Length: 282
Image (cartoon, rainbow, N blue to C red; front, side, top):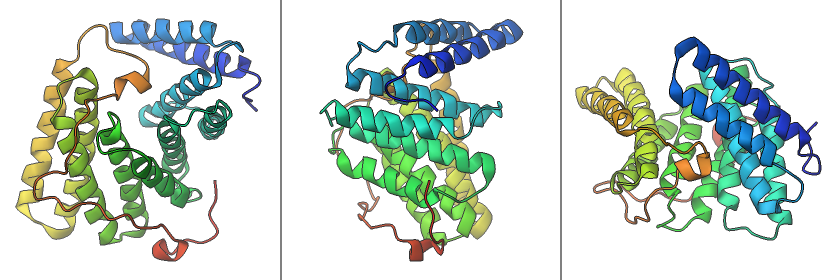
């Protein structure tokens, strides 16, 4: 098991990720994969014990998000390792006495737990995923540059619960929160804003498609198709030199304000009774 006192394991995982990206580069000749392999390899070399706890925590959460991407591509990986590393990143950040980025690390653990759920179909930890996503949002100010990212991760957690329980309230909430995330990201023109716009648009399109399938409203389908077109347009913006640090990649502009005609989010506690799941932990 990895430990915050033994970064060797984290270096090994980074090296493994770099190797995987390099192999994909050889197969597809995608320069971005090669760039990513180089960056990950450098991180593996630089990840030493002399680093401060806060910096090591940031590297570790970056690693968690990279590992969680493997679930998306269907690449075999240890489904528990991202969760363990995310927990360690939180401990490192707390040990370092700096809590300004604690929301980022909470979000990392939420993503790791969500990835494990998507890989196994086991609802264990689903409530914790939602709780962490909401906590990351609640901890940040209205103008936090990563707030749009936290909002969409929270929304996707609620969407996972909707897929598991078929509760319409969760689908409505994830659409509302997803639109707020999109609105915040769409007001900026930084690289991080475009990355956040792409992830927001892609997920909101899924949410709206689900509501269209449920209610048959053509307007939802039209909006879903428009968000899908936005995803494609944002991909065209990205060029060479894109950052491979997730922490940097999702740093957007400091914007405030809710989306027009979108109700403000209500801060509601998450309970076991609310989702009819019991005694779950990660």
